[in-house]
Structures are given as C-alpha cells and as structure tokens.
Image (cartoon, rainbow, N blue to C red; front, top):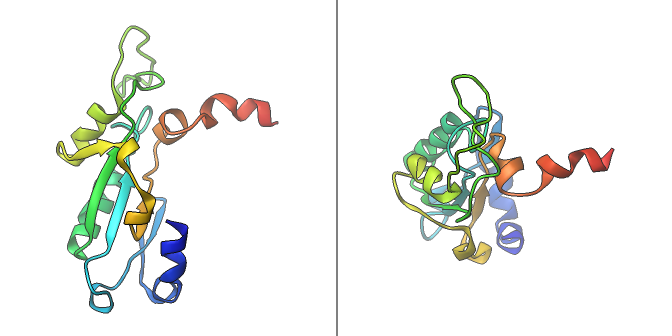
Length: 148
C-alpha cells in the first residue's frame, strides 16, 4: 500500500480533502487515473462502543461511491473483544458477536475476511473511527496502560 501511495504522491497532494467526522480522506481524481481508484475499508464491527462508528463508515462509503471509487470492505473473522449495549453503555458479558458478521451490517453483506486484503491491490485504505478499531483490530485497548 505504501509503495502504491508513493507512486501517486503528486496526485494525493493535489486531491481534494474530504472531512467525515474525525476522519480525513484524500480522494483521487478519477479523471486523472486510467481506472477508478480502488479503496479498501477495514471495519471493526458495528457500533461506536465496540465496533466501527457507523455514521463515519457509512458517510465514507457514500462519498467514495459518489466519486466513483471501487470500494471493498474487510473485517477480521473473529469474535469481538466484547459486546456493549449501546442504549446503556454497559458491557454484555454473556454475549459474543463476530466482527465480520457485525461489519456486514454496515457493508450490506459485502465484507470480506481481513485475511484476503492485499494492500498492493489498493490505492487507499480507510479505517473509520470507533472504539472497535482499538479493541478488535489491534491490542491498543488492552495494552495502552503498559505504555505509560
């Protein structure tokens, strides 16, 4: 992915900046590329407290679609770190949910296992916000205390 972005460095610098919630996305100009830019989005489930922030992910999907991007969604095929009741903010300790299955709610079922993502095949990568990114995509949520 980095080498692909380096190849398009000049295009990236001149591309318009799209702001979606706290996410900033550099968009490629379809007219200056031979094909539609391929964008990979990695989702972390569905819901701000235990997955991807839904509004942010959907807004990115809509804007990328409007700009003619060929967007593919990916998510880990594994259990979420935990499940949170979004009405109360309380953890639901007896419930298990799969990150990819929950991500399919945002991607309308079109979400591939993260193991199938080959960064060299894409021009850009988007990671929507939400606590699920720190809980389900890496160990940041559980190791942060060890850093300080």
